[in-house]
Image (cartoon, rainbow, N blue to C red; front, side):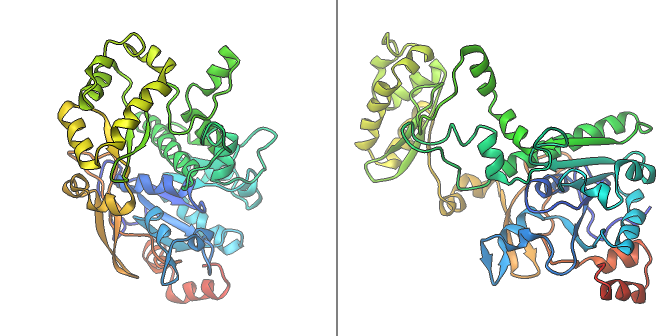
Length: 406
């Protein structure tokens, strides 16, 4: 076994080793989540420019800030496995790792000489996470895809937006984030099998990122199959609970109102001084409230328009209502609850001195994970990995650099 890293992880996955050879966002975010829990992750990029993700804004001094977050807690290695020397190095490293994460189109690794049979011959217990737009099988298997592809074809974009408006994407590639969560979950499930039976064979995880989005939409398929109805857009109003919406206060602040249970509805009514609505035949339970949602939302909209944000928040908190201010990033940073829980952590960084990064979710009381370092530069840990771990001499490493292998 190669020696433990000079940057050991802490958390429930400490000692687990992952090779992250994926690009851009979804699959690398799965690796980062596992690294948060203590896994030791080596990020492999092509020599030179590295991952194209490095070219995604926002930038500071020409460097991607996004990269700092999604590739936190990883060792940075440059390696071209398409070249014979790079392929050989990859194979030498493989027995020391538990998981490989990749997101190339189906058949790409086979073409490079890293088919399943070869991988499992070298490391029989290897867990392989394969993240693609549409999965390893089916007529779309070779199609490329990005978050907007997954969101569009997974049904999310169609149901997002105003009822009489165009379908809308969110301002963030949420389809990638969803895929990262399912990827990390899949790896953990496969590893539990191996923990219970160390002699079990390895596992191939086929993650369709489009399926990940559709899975999260829960009742979308069953509603269509059983009722013949496609779920439609409804703006900020909810089709499953009322009252619900985004409203503007007297001092021009945006707030979001929710609450599906009868008890929460009663609390919300008390907060605006309209207790008579609680037993009203039109509003006495969630089913009838949904039938009269437009009328009910107008009652709350009018009340918010007549009161300032702080008064509204205080009234809803006093009565146990479900109201939330809609935060910008600036407001998130200033929120006393966020500050008290120290969720946004300041981490030392080689480029900027220090950067703020969200902490680990969820939190483990007895064996907490951590954010140790932000994403670094291309190949910054080559000497440690190839020199200390694989015992390549300085001359051998220099020859590999000259050949463009690392």
